[in-house]
Image (tube, rainbow, N blue to C red; front, top):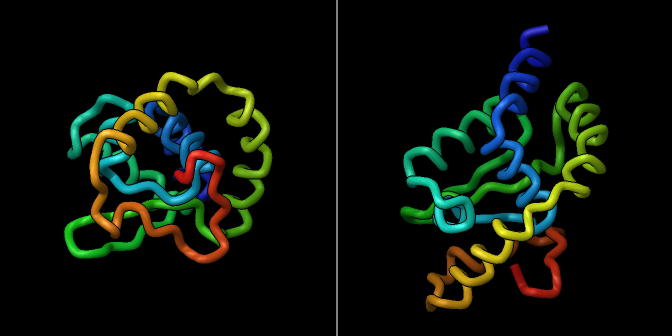
Length: 129
């Protein structure tokens, strides 16, 4: 039951739901992408992303000072079942403003290669993100 409790606690926050929706739509994202897309501080973004990771809903990888998050390829059965049920609900959410800010942020800077390199097997959308 502890795992299921952790999952539902992680999903009980609007910011974490927005983060999960972005991960489902855009694939792997750097913490800095969440900061710009959601208009939150780096510490707040990191804290919320760690909460998702602790619940098994996100996986991270570190490259130098950058930390990237994605939907894990393999999840525990509870996280997998909840995410599959949640996927269509998050797909129907209007996060256009978050995506607009993310696209503007990515277009406005020369990214460090660590922030733009997708992992093999991660579907990328037409914007490259």
